[in-house]
Length: 360
Image (cartoon, rainbow, N blue to C red):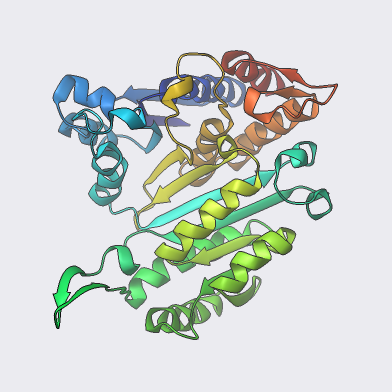
């Protein structure tokens, strides 16, 4: 298979972990006989240095001419956010990309390996067999995109935010989530607040109608407050979670904490045409950039998701996921994954990546 990948490494640790992901993709292409080419483009602070903007037209053109986008991270030191190079960098970069390509579906995976349960804030008994959860978050609707007002009313300071959805927005992500559930444990939980919110009542109605088209998937609804509690109390009870923009924003961050390191969590965003952007859920971590200590797993797993979802190369994606698991089993760790166990060997970013490639 021949595919062109837009590579937007960005800032901070982005270029380091992106280099790891490309090295792993090259190993996969060599083993399975594929031809992956990379079109590199600037984004974030790196783009501002050259173009005085965070998402130049050249970068958008590279993305449009590619089969998928592999994104790193953007942003600089918090103390420098007033600097024009970093001001609104994330908004002007990743959020602008989502808008430019109408990415309405976001997918995040949370994986906890049994060998790393000491890193999780949960009790070991809850994670004895590990954890593997996928959450689907709708990206272009809900309260973030409705009308916002901040001012005065009847002599008092007043604010309002309007949440809104139509049935096509809900159907689009629901079908995607159900199809994913069919490839996993065939279990999907839709999360809403249908006991209060009109948007959630519509969400539940539409998702229930879509569920009828997937009789092989065990489907249920759950209120968001109960879901937040159950993710802590019984995370193994979840496989695929489907929810709206606001709830998905909060619950996916909750899930990222369960793994013990945000460096483990990949994500993907899709539009209705299936075009995808893949990125780690963490930030640019400028404080550790250039030190060869960043955890590349989330970036590498994002590349694996690209193979599975954009290129339909599930065997190759599984090979990457299996190799990462084997490296963990063998006792190799990046600094953020170290638990001080006797059999652990802490490696730098490049050395850890080489171990993954060896296992592939």
